[in-house]
Image (tube, rainbow, N blue to C red; front, side):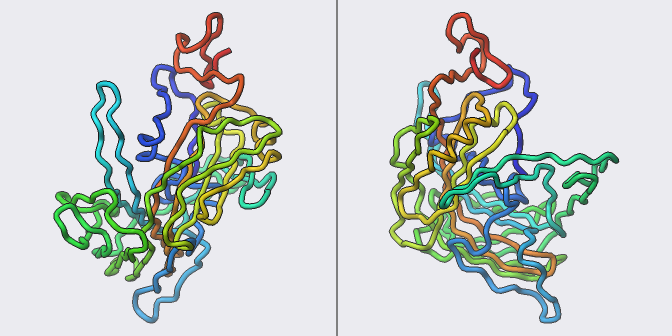
Length: 354
């Protein structure tokens, strides 16, 4: 579920990172069962990838493919150049996975307010439960609680298509506290695959039945557009280097300009990976009218996705390269302390100078 940055003590707030540093963290497109999600509660099945065949014994009936219960994430972490006294950080490829026995509830309901082309504007609604749901469940609709699922193992997972720094063409992962990561000693370069390579994750089965996931390798995302300036009544255009292999990936965009003050709305786009996208003036105007806060940003992600369905629901394999950048809004001065503000203004709780 999408996390709201609320109630942080001012001294703990930090400025957003630059383009390349934020690519390592890019929280927008976290997978729902690993960290956070977009408003639809999960990745689109089969977007820019090939779904694996559902594994397991023949008497195991597949579940509902619309219910996301597991995610394996292959994420390109871009290198960060040296800055001042901070040394450069080399790039890497991160792998993380987890499978649950049911869907993860969201305490925020995102409702579509407008849509144009590949983009939509959504606003949040927080349901209310008169009887508290307790620590083991979440309020997902008015007076409706949903239990949090439990993670379990799917046996040894054999990974192919990701080469290691030592030259191996794959590796295997055993669950540790029911989560999957490369074992100690396995280091993955940046990137650990070539564009178009087949990346596969094969789970041997344990609590969950055996399954296989496949997705295509992607090129690292490279934004070529300048810093965006958002103004009411004006569209904005994004540009990036398109992939060599058309059709193997998609572009996902999230524009949130109020998250440091409690998110009031966001624009999300799901579009073909052609190299350009325009967000309409009408959507931008509606988003700005909802309110702004300090350090507004946009996140752009290139994704290749493969899916399969087990008895409990859908499991995704998502290969991602993402970039987060600051956006400019005329009249907005962002801050973390009063000294960041013009003379006579004070840094507010939403990180704006007034």
